[in-house]
Amino acid sequence: MARPGTGTLVLANGLGFPPSNVARVVVWEWLNEHGRWRPYTAAVCHHIENVLKEDARGSVVLGQVDAQLSPYIIDLQSMHQFRQDTGTMRPVRRNFYDPSSAPGKGIVWEWENDNNSWTPYDMDICITIQNAYEKQHPWLDLSSLGFCYLIYFNSMSQVNRQTQRKRRLRRRMDLAYPLTMGSIPKSQSWPVGTNSGHPCSCQQCLLVNSTRAASNAILASQRRKVYAGNGNGTMAVRQSNTFNGTALWSLGGVPNGGMAKMEQVRAANGMQVTTFSRSQSAPSHAHLPGQNNLNRPGTQRVAILSTRASIPPGVPALPVKNLNGTGPVHPALAGMTGILMCAAGLPVCLTRAPKPILHPPPVNKSDMKPVPGITGICRKTKKKHLKKRKNPEDVVRRYIQKVKNPPDEDCTICMERLASSSGYEGILRHKGAKPELVGKLGKCGHMYHLLCLVAMYNNGNKDGSLQCPTCKAIYGEKTGTQPPGKMEFHIIPHSLPGYGDCKTIRIVYDIPAGIQGPEHPNPGKKFTARGFPRHCYLPDNEKGRKILKLLIVAWERRLIFTIGTSNTTGESDTVVWNEIHHKTEFGSNLTGHGYPDPNYLDNVLAELMAQGVSEAHLKD
Image (cartoon, rainbow, N blue to C red; front, side, top):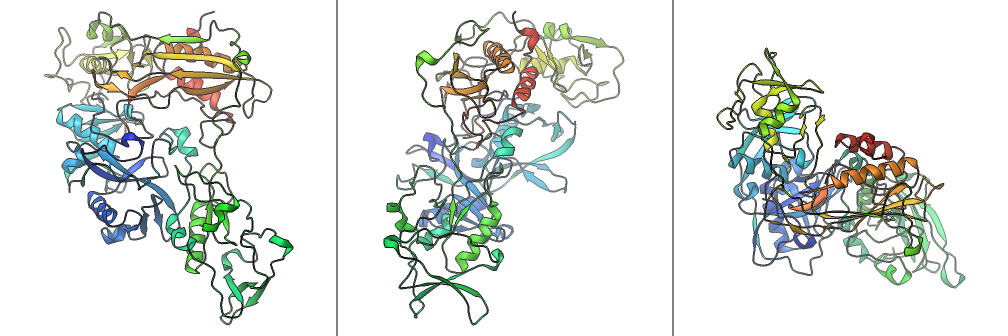
């Protein structure tokens, strides 16, 4: 089993550009509905880079380089891809990788989909596969990247570990992605960074991934326009028939007690026109309920009268619906409305989503109380001291029973028949471990070649435990690779949404940056620790306290965090969550990592169980 490679150098210093005087491969990517960053082809990336050099705040027509992308335009100022026929907007980012990685060599890895066509892997997965391929690993486990797939290079296939479905994959040569040197000028404020709030790719996050539905491409040309008269002292505002009889916006009061006279007349072409009298015009600073400027990260604008000069009066505000269901207007409908109103020469403002409430009100130290039933308020983990390692074959034999007559099935580790020799024959050699020897795991009954189980154990944490690759049953006590750190917990006098009848347990994790140990992906290399200390919340009730006790066990077994590649920023060699979800949003649930969430407590108990942490391990 191979570990993720080190080809990714993503979002260095949080702004999406590399340090000065360093060559990097540039890959432009767009965010799909599953929260995954999908790469554009090398040809498209070259085209975007060429436009970027000419006008860093312009627009890129993708159809000029790829006919299949003719409906799409990228607005470089807002960093969004805009589909003209549906109005759908998606964030894009400019990502950077090492020149020696797969995109720098023009290598593309693809899998065969249900339509018998080929789909490229995400770039971080492509780089990981290529690194394992270059190191001549016979197979690769993608679970560290959040996918339950095994890649087998001998048969060039991808196998789903849960369903056992097998797909073909291929490696092909393409145009190398563009190279860049140095950093982007400081004046270019790219709205992509470590605080962009993109969730991870787990099922919980997929349901709540929100879209920053704002299009500077629509507003850029409209903000500077002033309503021009039509010759008779009035200015016309066309009303779209899409919203027949429904006002898209309302006008506030007119200063100095004046009133805005609004009349609906029928134009010569039959279109309904709304007119404002020039003498009784709409107020120049009318307050529009819900109106906001664009939600652009790094530019937190306040909707006050002094900032209204950039948006003309009478601009409709469309509260765009997030994918988690908040807001009345769907992004596609809002985009189409923007197109129609732009075609009519009218501006439109897409309002930003409400901000999440990440933290509770300030709490005095005297108000923080220990959690009943739990000794102390802190747990620390130190650097793991390597014990004398047990013989891998002895560990495996402890959990299996020898099978004399194996069935005519595949070993799901090496994909060879159980009746034949292991695919690791000639690669691993252990005394007494014959390549044709088959064993059955005691709890679950799944069968594998003994040599395959030894190979899997050697690629793991080597802690004396074993986990079935098919059903995830754990044999022994599973431990992780969490770096040293501190876990604190206490009760604060505030209630979580949905738990108004109890107080709140606050957990604070703090892990400093450091050097990777022998159990980590790149021993001896530095690792980063972004976003610490991290604050998490549980209700202070019976189930919440039980979960805290189990989390303490998981922390002491080093299972809460690990070192890997961030699904949010793409940064490698950094501290990331390890498949046990935490609620980091205190007073709302806009990101999906907050409350109310009626299923969360049961879900996290199941995730702890999957890591081998259950109530049976709690001390009385």
